[in-house]
Image (cartoon, rainbow, N blue to C red; front, side, top):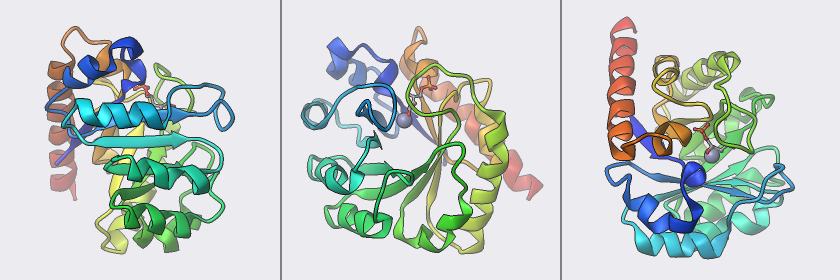
Length: 225
Ligand code: DX5
Ligand code: ZN
């Protein structure tokens, strides 16, 4: 089952509650936390996550693009995020951190920037519930999808399957009607879409259309073996 996670980075920040409810039917709401250090952009933090949680029933998928996630990430789980993703490049002790996030009751995920290979994390995969392969350099919405990431998506899918792990494989950056099928064919099953959803006339309709495309592509991948 393909999951579609609209990114509120492309929503109107002055009307976040309404914007969250505009995509009801989405599997998760993707919340991009940026600290202006790990990435050259600044968005929102814990108080906004706490308020968002109260204003929507859609579970929150917090993507932390921040330095020192070892210190901050568990607080997002505590604040009610259903899933907390930290960057491999920023974490000092990823295993300890993943365990702490899970102990707080959230799903734990690790994100990899385009230049970070997945292979060094092979042995750590059982510690995570999801791997996020970035398909743009993190920091901004509305960037063009990086096709050069497709081989890494395929290699990650093979690692997950080889070990028989229940991990989800998320892609984030430039995912749209034009690119989602490539991602699904490569083995992704969770799709973040910011501008493709919030830039659409009908955001809920855009979510449905993206899901249909992803499921069709995943089905053809399954038949192709
Ligand atoms: C980028 C963020 C993404 C962003 C995606 O650093 O992590 O979640 O919102 O936006 P689009 O879908 O417009 O590329
Ligand atoms: Zn993101």
